[in-house]
Image (tube, rainbow, N blue to C red; front, side, top):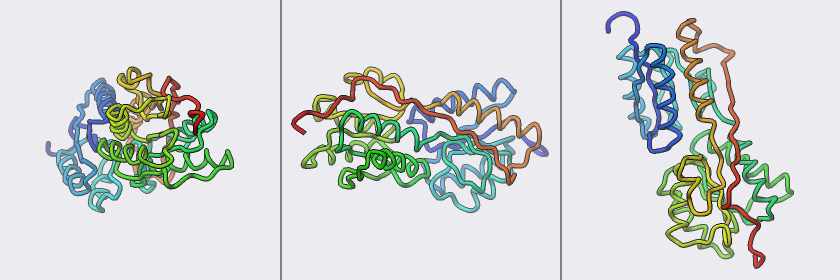
Length: 284
């Protein structure tokens, strides 16, 4: 592999348990294979040290390009290594790294929260994170929706933590135990949604009779869960295809990834209304 780059393109993701990440990896692989490249998948677990080691391996293999979903606080060496190859950021963004393909996270959660507020809910539980830029934007959308209705967010109904199944389960349990309990819950990551859904089933909560529930991500199970889950459908195909084609373009043209005028592409999510949301119980 001496001299020049290989026919490998690296993809750094936290995990592939999330349907968003696994679908993204598959679509990127298809995109690159058509152009004679092969995807090298690296799982970081959002651990900055593992991430750095994985980046070292990719650069030492002289990958032709890299797609990254970086951890919350990547090490300096990781960023320095990343700048040695054509790269594109996906979903999460560090402005100094240039090109980025993401979603309008704030708008997605704003629309979902507005849906609940229009149904009459005023005690809405929120389960999300402030660890990543995406989580911060999602919470901002939640707050803006309340502000538009001249309402304040009830901070006692807000749960912040790591975006994983365990946190989704535990946070949902805590919210249900509140007195008075929320009349609706909105979750803001694929894994948190899975944990929340499992907990609501385990607790035999009547959805939407006693609690409305809005999820994040729209795989097959969301369609068949309980009464059918109202959720945010993510633009996975637009993101993955656009990101992959742009990286190939950058590799062909030698476009500088340190360009002061980065390419930014924002895709829109869609609120899919099913039967897990309804007006709050009259007793509330």
